[in-house]
Image 1 (cartoon, helix red, strand yellow):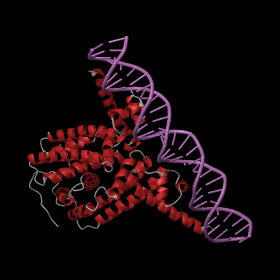
Image 2 (cartoon, rainbow over the protein chains, first blue to last red):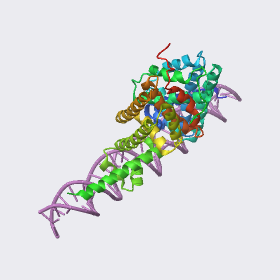
Image 3 (tube, chains in turn cyan, yellow, orange, purple):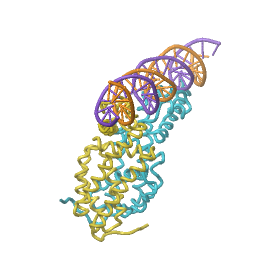
Image 4 (cartoon, rainbow over the protein chains, first blue to last red):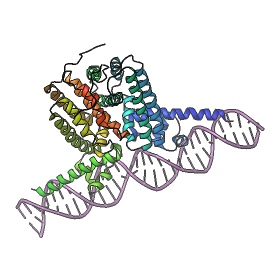
Length: 197
Length: 197
DNA sequence: GACCGACTTGGACGTTTGCCCAAAACCATA
DNA sequence: TATGGTTTTGGGCAAACGTCCAAGTCGGTC
């Protein structure tokens, strides 16, 4: 068989995915063109439509691939933390590595945005976020979190995404200074209420 | 003087701003063209560059105008709430009116994203967000919030933005169920820690 | 009436876009 | 050396883009 040809195609495809992910962060979702991706990947312009049905298809595949790895890894590492309070502290430290204007942060934000208009991407991203949320919730439960673990996880993930957003506006924002409120939220003692007016 | 002409120009300018704001939400920041704005505003294509130096200039003016009104109003209404705990409860109720896919939500998210690549927009948006944060912080302080009011306000605003983001992915997300963790964060009793390893 | 400045019109420009396709290049097999 | 399937090439297409501009409209002053 033409095994070598297939191999060559696979690496080209990977190069296209990598180039696309980088360019989404650099130029924005709508600022990426087939020619840019091809040039970055070092191939002819036409090759994009050989490996992918359309430009959105390529961008969706590229971004979800990176995002899945990122968010899954973050959620996984967080789950390794011994208790919620040191967990959020670790999380803020980890988050400090993202300035809000680095490629990784920008890619995530671009995805959220594009997801509003691309149903396929929205479903994929929703799946990723829901999975992260569920894993954090079960981690909170295992560690004896007193309140509604699902709710706390939802707010926590939302706060993380929001902080990444805000860091883009204000790179000087000191994330480690925000440990107090987050620790208060994930407390393990019984100091909690269910509902109220 | 040519008062009537100037008046006509002013209303045309307003119409362009309104059309641009709506189109940013509908088509995305990068999906708005001068011709689309002109058509929506009911004027000839060339008029855009008579009133605005460039397309980004128009989009920046349009989006910051709407965002300033929105965020300021939200922060102002929140500050009217009697105490932090009912305040966050009110906030979640208010936020529930935004599905994450409505024009207002989308405009805000589009701005955050475009701000990463447009320094002028970034500075303007940063100003708006910082102002909202400061007003919420002083409100927390006035109401006897036990912890670091600045930090709590920062997390609160980040969580709000993050929740709007997540609602775009999952319109079924019940925001009112998230009151617990947020209430725990804004508590007024002395149950707080300063820093920790 | 003529005149003037502000505003609007609609088409023109050069560029870039996503997508397509006939032809060439490549590699393992026969 | 031929054959066949896979991958790559580079140009072509119609459409849309931002910006510009000469001509035209409009209301108010001489």
